[in-house]
Length: 468
Image (cartoon, rainbow, N blue to C red; front, side, top):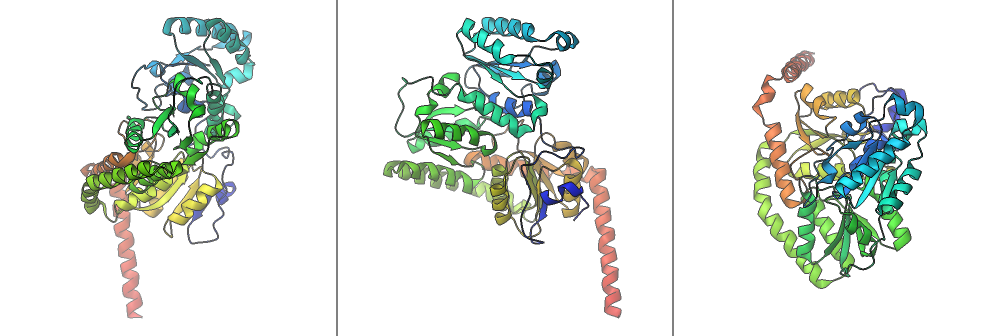
């Protein structure tokens, strides 16, 4: 095991070496250069996919640029979410306050774009200068007759996970506004799927084939009106548990809607997610439909997955993602491809999540909470991985090390959810891992040379021992 910062020693574990009791849900260690994002970014990635809402960043223009089009979330209709609006606060507002500028921006944008609602994101500077964002939003809401919702997401308040909570609190203000639109007794809300590359549409189609109505998608391809009726659905199905469990808990407490945590990544977890929903309704026809759906989809994709497995068998992977539920699915999906996960971690996992991760990983696997680039790259070197699965911040680490990379985060443009997503995932892992480009990587060449030297040294030791 490499040397790590003393204060982080309890957040790293190698399965099999000692009792598993991983520390997690702690603030990032100062100076550790966490891969986590800020509170503002966390709230933005959750709310951003609501396509008919106005998203106004109250802060410096850099904050808006940082999160502009941050997800690959697509819309089946309006695309107002893809615009990046900012009040562009500067020195003048730092001294005199930015409330007038916020009021003027909100009024002008609402009149120009006619959104169904507006979210106003408070950034670090707003927290420092003390603008009363709530009062400005309330005034504009009364004048414009649409929900104008402050999102209390000053970046310095915590980490990305605190931004998720701020987003859930903002979303909850839209829930319960529509008591009239008819809903089936077998209706669900899809929570925490963000329609990256159209994944929400894939999942909605599965539920349609099962005989289950989707009341709302929060927030992938989301609409303000649909969120308004979500309080009358029979079940909340939570995909991204890190971001949406809090909203599900609020809806359970207020509207008595039960919720289930699921994952749509990989064959096993997709099938289990659909069966979980089918079993909840205790409807024989829904269960039969689900059995037929899963059987036909697995029959369709399995030969293709097996074809990729032939080439990938024996490779090793590192996985570092935002939510730990996604990590579970990736460990299982990689096994289908014959790839062993030797390093795995997340930014926001809790103790229950890591306990489960410890159960499903092989002995020798490094499990890490809230890692930093130096740790991650050293673990990858130590375990000699062929592939890294992560997000935009992990991509440069992989490429500098001459390691294949698969984007499984906000920015990707390829659907990886559902059964067809497993085929796309297999193809992407195969294309990157088997690419001939890695033979030209200086880092890879150096690594292979060191491996050869180490093998020679071991061989020499072996001969010496034999002579003795």
